[in-house]
Each structure stands twice: as C-alpha cells, then as structure tokens.
Image (tube, rainbow, N blue to C red; front, side, top):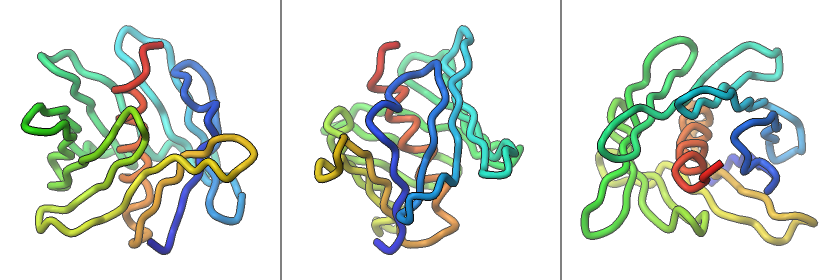
Length: 155
C-alpha cells in the first residue's frame, strides 16, 4: 500500500482529543471523543473543519452510523458468521481479521483489498498504521479504524 496514517497507542480513549499523522509525521486529522449516551467521535481536518463523525446506534449488535463531509455514508455493522467481520454498507466494503489484535484487512464488493490496519511495534511507542492505496479511501479507512476502536474499547 502506498499511503499510511498513524495513530499513537494513547488514542484508545473515547473522551479525549488525539491527532492522526501521515507518513511524514504531519498531523492531518484531529479526532475528538464527545461524551454522550451513545459513543461519538468527530473527525476534523488540519484546517479544523469537521470532515466526519462516527457514532454508535442502538441495535441488537454493534452498529455505527458514519458521516463524511456532512453526508451519511451509511452504517458499519458487526456481524457474526463463521468469522467476525464488519460491513460498511454504503461502500459495499467488508472488514475481516483480528480486531482486538489490530490486524485486519478491508475488501471491496469484488473481494479486492482496499487497505489494512495493523499495530506497528517498531516505533518508540505502539502505533496503529492504516495502510491504503487510493487517496480517496483515506477518510473511510480512518472511520473503519475508529469503528473497531469503538467496538473493542469499553470506556
């Protein structure tokens, strides 16, 4: 994958503010957890303009509503099959892998890999790396990583 976003390990907190950096170490997004009855994360670009949000919905299983640039991008649903997976319905993407181990891949409706998220231990602290090929997938890939964080954290 040609592009990468990095998030430091300390990001695993719902009620705070953290930065997302590109491969050059520049902050490209700020994510802010907002206290509410449902979990909600708001994403701002480096001009401090809101470009996305993700919030949990009341449902039988974990389900997240996603917005990008003020437009609904549908929901990300957690499904139980022979393996655990997330589905990003409006984009037709599915996410498979080890969510709690931060090692998963994202596939399109044609079963082609769009990107991956993994833990990189070679930094001074743990970093989570979001790898993707197409720059237009940068924000959706970040939203998927945030949905996994919402799914796997209990705070």
